[in-house]
Amino acid sequence: MSNAIQFTDANFQSEVLESDQPVLVDFWAAWCGPCRAVGPTIEELAKQYDGTVKVGKLNIDENPQAPSDFGISSIPAVLLFKDGKVVETLVGVQPKERYEAALGRVAA
Image (cartoon, rainbow, N blue to C red; front, top):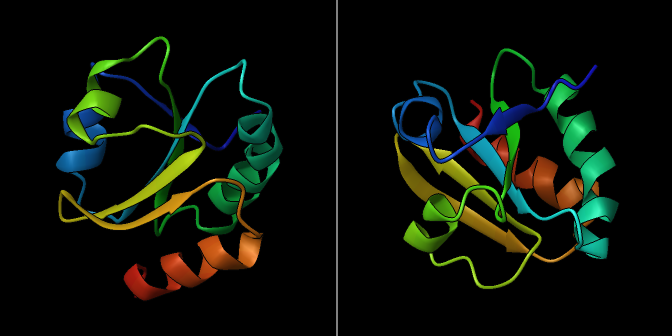
């Protein structure tokens, strides 16, 4: 079972923007090879930060509004939110350590 939350246009406001925890959102699509490569790392982070950071994925094909609102033009794009604002953006396939470093800056 996946620990990563499935974000949608319908729940983005409540789950991400109004969250009292930092939130990591992986903007992805099923047809995107690099997105599939990042997937296992996102799952590991969801387990690792369970209870301190919300970690999840948003399929851009099924949910076009949020990617449009945040200017997502390349995927995979991982945005880190704190207090409803984007505090970090990582585009493309990154090593797990880059995501951990970003999370470490907000998950105090």
